[in-house]
Image (tube, rainbow, N blue to C red):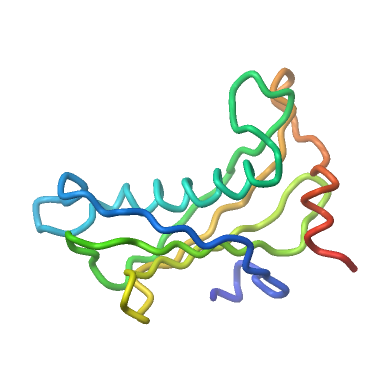
Amino acid sequence: MDKEHGDAGRKLLLTTRIPVRWGDMDAYGHLNNTLYFRFFEQARVEWIEQLGFPVRSEAESGPVIIHADCTFLIPVNYPATAEVRLYAGRPGRSSLMTWYELYVEGDERMYASGSAKVVWMHVETGKSAPLPDSVRALFPD
């Protein structure tokens, strides 16, 4: 992982599998670059919902991302099943870094890597809110 983004102490929190659909391809027959971000988003939403926080507009507070990136290493082609691994690092007051690794099921090579800074937000005010205790508990001192 990328040391400049502060990935020390990262912890694997979730692995999910997502089928690649034929319509997900671009003109070159590769997974369209926007889908990598969608796959990372899907892993993040699954993880947050597993913690008991529904990701919906009517929630009092919830996660938003303020930065996201992706490094495309090997093109993904149809047919395939993407395996996305989600990692997170030690939380701050209202934020934590997340990292993503994308593999194709049955292949040990990493096809893409990415990161996103997640900030917990109070929906009504749009301002940051302290991370829930259940998120902090994932990283005991």
